[in-house]
Length: 350
Image (cartoon, rainbow, N blue to C red; front, side):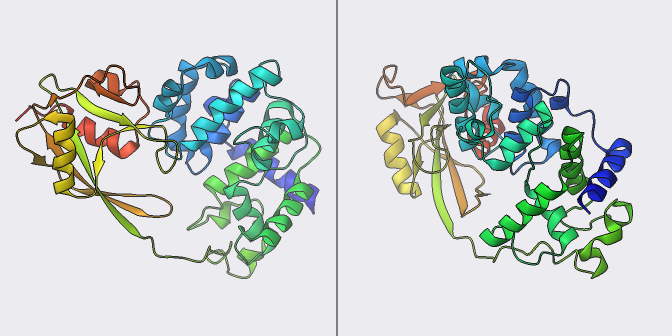
């Protein structure tokens, strides 16, 4: 069965697979690694532009290792899940320190690097070096769960072990890079989460989910839960030069290490905090909005304080700075904060 699955996927890939993705030309370990990390939780259509900008600025692993963290986070800004970028940066430094500036070709050494688990390590070795290692990303889990009729949620330990056994069995001995791309492509373009195109699938003939009419039920869903809601007031302190006060967030919590706006629990607290930073006259309410994280919803109420005048010099404070619109592009900012600031960047001071 396994050779039949691989051969069908490879024939389908030769006719319909994606062969013009930027990380395929050249398909070296650094580019494959970067693409695999970016593609976690993110679609190809979104990743392409970020990938091209990233490798344009940092084309090699050594240049990534030598880059400032702010540079890396600025290039990543908007992709979310910023821990991926910090792990990428840390892993590059470790490769320089321990592996002569290259990603190791030994599976155990590669999988031990920050942010590189079993599936990512397998994808790098399979695609960059044609080594026979299976992968099990979200798209592949969906393909295998439907094909083999696995009902439970793939996040359960026993289910994941079963999926890894199937992934290993189906991985061929030749054309491993093409097969790896093929099964990812199938999940992304044909065996999609909703409305899969079973009539065009090369595995449809003996797919259990299709046979039993279960494509909408498989793979099993994670038990749902209601997301809690939190609220914050973001202060936009803008001086007469249109510079905005930013603060670097601490090492814990969401957006850790990124530059963001000062925050307060409510408008009254926001006024008090604003007065600690600058002399202010009035505040303009900006339309509130909600940003959804994986584990909670954040209701954001922005307050714009124009013509703010700094009370204290902050040149010696590495965690606070007044930034122009041009400087914002060089910093790692949370996506909703970047959008908020870009939205008011062209607005005249009141």
